[in-house]
Length: 399
Image 1 (cartoon, rainbow, N blue to C red):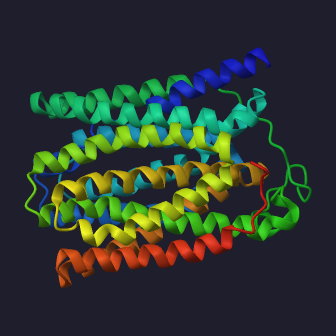
Image 2 (image 1 turned 90 degrees about the vertical axis):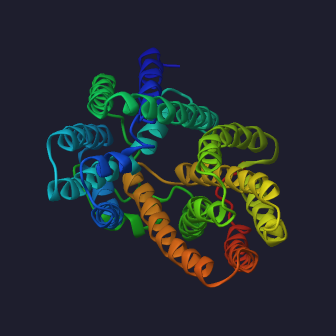
Image 3 (image 1 turned 180 degrees about the horizontal axis):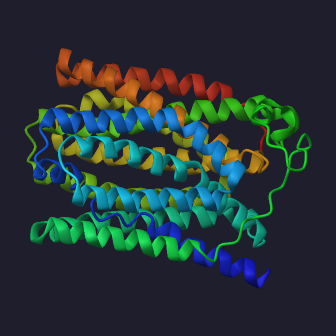
C-alpha cells in the first residue's frame, strides 16, 4: 500500500466521521422557534430546503466531477459555516433564505463525499475492501451523530449561542482536515477526452464499467433509490404512528436516538453477510425480508411494544440495502461522473421520499392505524416485488 495514499485515507476517514458530528441536528427547529419564527415560517424553511435540495442535486454533482470532489466538499462545508453564522446573526425572513444556503451546502457534499471516499480507498489499494471500510465509517458516523444530538441538546439548554459557536468550530475543523487531501487521479471512461467535460457521458455505455450491464446498473440505481425513499418516509412516519398510540415524547425520542445505534449495527452486519453470501444476495435478501415484515405490520398495530420492536427491525434492514446497493453502483461506474451519478441517486431518493411521505400522511389521516399500516405494507410489497424482479438478472459483480 502506498504510504501517502494510506495517510490520505486515514485523514479523510477522520473527516468523514466528524461530518456526522452535527451538534444542532436534533434541535435546529427549536432554535428557529427560539429566534421568533412562527410554525408557518418554520414549515416554509423546511419546504424550501427540500425543494432546493432536489433541484440542486444534479448540478452540484456535475460541479464535483468538473471542479473536483474535494473542492465541492470544501465549498459545501464553508457554506455550512456561513449558514451557522447567519443563524446566529440574522433574524426574521432572512432565516428562511438561509434554507437555500443550507440546501446548496448539503447538495455540494452529497454525491462527492462517498465518491471521494471510494477513489481514495482505491488509490490506497483498498478498493476490494471498500464495503468494509464504508460500513465501519458509516457505523462510526451514526454513533457520532447520536452522541452529537445528545450533547447538543445539553449545550442548547445552557446557551443557544454556545451551541452554534461549537457547531461553527467543528466546520472549521472539517476544513482543516480536508486541506491535506490530494485530488484523486480519476479512472476515465473510454469515451473521455482529455480536458473535456461532457455530461452526456452519463447515458453512454462506456461510462459504466460493466459494459453490457450498463442499463441494468442504471435500473439498480433508480430502483434502490426509490425503495430507499420509501424506507426513509416510513422511518419519519414513525413519529405519527407512535403519536397515534399516545406514546410519550420521551419514548419517541428514545426510538429515534436508538435508531442511530441500529444503523451502525446494520452497516457492520451488511459487511459480514456480504463476505459470506455476496453483496447482491445480501441486498436482495434484505429487501425480501423487509417486505415480509411489512406484510405482518398490521397485526402488530394493536400492541405498541411489539410495533416498537418491529419498527426497529424495519429501520435496520434498509441500511443493509442502502450500503450494499451503493457499493455495487460504485464498483460499476468510472470516475468521470461518479459524483453526478451518486447525486442522481440522492435526487431520486429525495423525490420519492417526499411523494411517499405525502401518501402515507394522507392514508394515516383517512384510516384507522391498523388499516393504514396494511395499506403501507401492501405498497412496500408491490415496490419490492418490482425492484427485486429487475435486480435478479443483474451481474454487476461476482460478489
